[in-house]
Image (cartoon, rainbow, N blue to C red; front, side):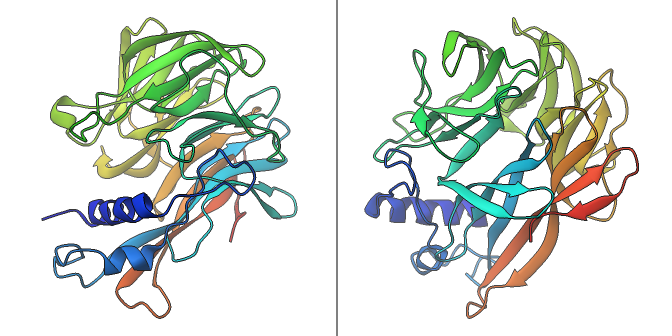
Length: 344
């Protein structure tokens, strides 16, 4: 039986082939709207909660929070699959809660440069089958394809080292059979908005640099792509140093003492949602026992941790066959544990 989200993606893929997108702030950047109701109508009866097309779950998620250097702003991705919703990169002012759309795009990762707060993100240009890396200012201006030899196709999930001198990313694309190739982790030097000395280092997906820049936590497939995936630590030559847990989306704490990751598909030793594991190995500790949540990032000084919390599900108005899963951004003050919701 097909997975519900696989059915949705397939239907959206058929729809997107008929409806090219256009960027709201930069014509070359792909910006498609997710017309979910049309996807549902085009979907075979095998899709749905019980296999009979009864209930489809779609997302209304704020994810991938990145805190700016001054800790005054959080940049994030809004993945909203409701009919007519705007999908793209936003930022929210921490003090006021004011939210601004920066660019419409279906994202495959983003990160902030730690010194300049420039946003590097992965998205497909109109008419292109695979994403590549783009750069823009914190105000959404100056959107352009990232400089450097070989940028794209299939470049995803950029991640800066904490001193801003290096960048890592994942390459993955579909071959002529429509199957994904093995994800490969690449690293390169960062020089004023361009990548130089790009090199493949090891199999791997989303990654996070250790604060000293000598190693990375990287999400790796297990044999036959079995779930859950493994959070491994490798050096910059690709040599395996350690295995920290089972999950996805690693994020390294600025002081280097722990790694946050997502244990979503299968609880990792009793931890589900955002889990923190000591960088030297040990048992993972959950961010919260009460809520499912998704990794975000720390502020540069480690004082704040921004993440996405699953708020629950609700029935889409006028569409009883669609159930919407909602997540919103929260901020935790690390020293006290105090939390507050920042997007609504």
